[in-house]
Structures are given as structure tokens and as C-alpha cells.
Length: 254
Image (cartoon, rainbow, N blue to C red; front, side, top):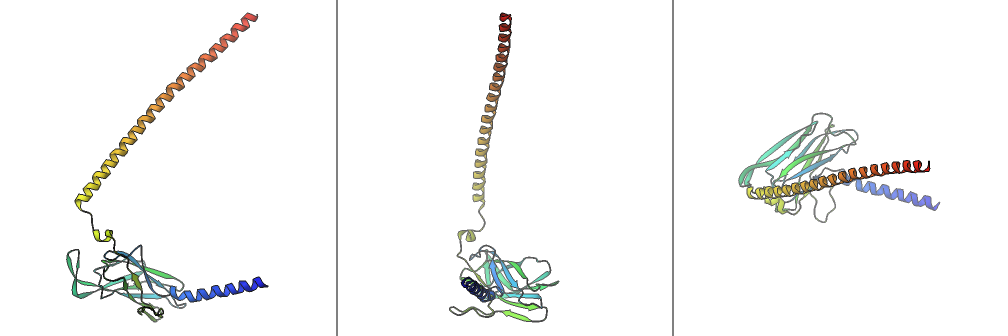
């Protein structure tokens, strides 16, 4: 009886955790594929779940931050969806790799060509973007989700410090600390040449080791073969000697 009550209590507790945690997985979110380091480029995924049982998600609009504009935004091609990139002229041009950029992506819109995101499914929308800003720890992307029945859900509410999560939170991309790899850029020709020379030296050393091993192996094989032949000859001589000795004994006995 006691065991049954414990099991029932555990089941209720499990259901409560599931109900409380489910909203956290229901909204549109964004996560990097790996890391999103300041000053670098990243591949991120906008994750869109379908929250309706009687309608499909047929459109997604993601607005990109205007306070931290991104010069390069390239959505990945997805079967069954058409992506449209909208650019806006910047009040203050950006300088990327020594070049001035006068416009940046302000919105990416995905429109379903077929059924869209059906009930009970989620869809990921990959986007390559950069260069990521260095003067902020996060980027906020406001998203608008449209259903086949005409319903529109706006995921645009910004999380306030110390406050509870809003009902329709905007997707937030956390940026990690910049590393030397993200700021170093492409290697110089001299570095590439040095690496090539090092690789060549390593290759030569490996080749010499292989040849030495082959010679050693070859010498061992030759020695083994000679010893084998000698053994056969000695064995044959022993057999012949035994036969002759047997015959002599037989003759003597007779």
C-alpha cells in the first residue's frame, strides 16, 4: 500500500515537472552550431516548434538586430521552404575586413512551399552569420510565426534582468568570448610556407623510418629463410643417418 502511494506521488511529481518545463521547449529559439564567438562567424539554428494541433506553421519571419547589424547573413537552403533576405541601408557604415558596408540584413523570411511544419513536429532553420559584434554578450532576434489557419504568434518580448520569462520571449543568441582563432584571420603566406616545410620534414622522417623498418624486415626474412633451409638439410641428414644405422644393425644381427 505504501509502495503504491509512493509510486503515485512520483507520477504526479513527474507530470508536474513535465507540465512546468514544457513551455520552455515550445517557443522559437536560436542556438549556435558549435560556438558563436565575438568578432567571428557562426552557423546558428532557429528552432521552430508547432504548438497547434489543428494547423501547420507556414511562415517564419526573423528580424535581425539593428543596434548590432550583421554584414553577412546567408540562410541554408531547406527543402519545402523559400527564404527571402531583406537588407536595410545603415545610418553608419560598417567596416569589415577593411571594407565599408553600407547595408546589412534586417530580416529573413521563410515561406513554406508545401505543408510547412505539421502538428507534432519542429523545424530548424540554419543561418550563417557574421561578423558577430564584440561589444555585446548577446543578440536578440524577434520572430513572427504564422500558422495555416491565419494565426500569428509574435516571439518578440525581451527578457528583463531578474524578471520571470515572458510568455512570448524573443530568441536570444549568447556570444562567447573572442578567441585568437576568430581574430587571427587567414594565415600568412610565410606561415603557410613554414608549415609546408615542417610537413615535408615530417614526411621525410616518416619515409626514412618506413624504409629502415622495411630493410630490417627484409634482413630478418632472409635470415629466417637461411636458417629454415639449414634446418631442413640437417633434418634430412639425420633421417638418412637413422635409416643407414638401422640397416647396419639388421645386417649385423643376421
